[in-house]
Length: 268
Image (tube, rainbow, N blue to C red; front, top):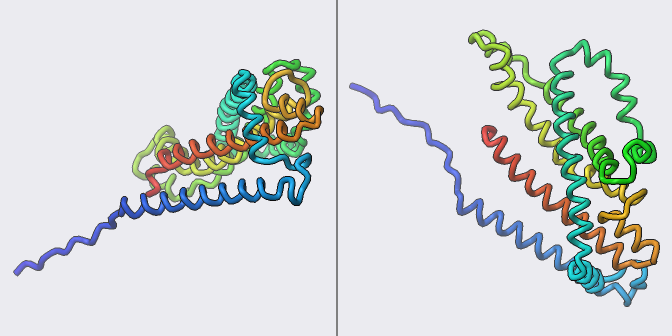
């Protein structure tokens, strides 16, 4: 008599439940945002002088005026271009350098003190030197952004490669895996979590690097608008620039979250 074989129950994913959860999160986030804006509008002029904190209505009016005059597209495009190019260049160089050193322990040990010394330098202190090297054009903003991103991605990639479980590597070697297969099936997937974490952390710093360059020497960009508004004691203009920068960071970070869920779909 044959015994019936009972298949183990497979976990099921409730897509409707996940959709409801995400919808609830979005509603709560929207409610918190509206609450913060309402509080800001309420205290402005009643408890705090608008000169110091402006108000959402004034900030929105300034953004509309920038958009209507064409200033917004010019300056926003300049900042986004410098940030995007600097981010891509810094991320590629940081990943390549971190991956190479992570796979070569001797070279990593030799270069470690020099890399640490460079990383400990305040990046804003390099801004005058970078401006001397690259001028006041977009090249200096790209360089500032790229340098900041490079170190963050490099350190995360290096740590991710070094933290790969040797059991996985040895198991694949026993099965006859070559070096290229080790990299493709073990090292890169294992380090990807670290790399994506470095990319997500470096997004706001890439924007900071660009804006710092614009604040120091530029005639275009969101940083230039903020510096110009600050020089004229234009509080709504300063807050409008800050709102733009915050919005850019949120949008780009959301895009990276989507990419992360796709790149790490194997972890599910």
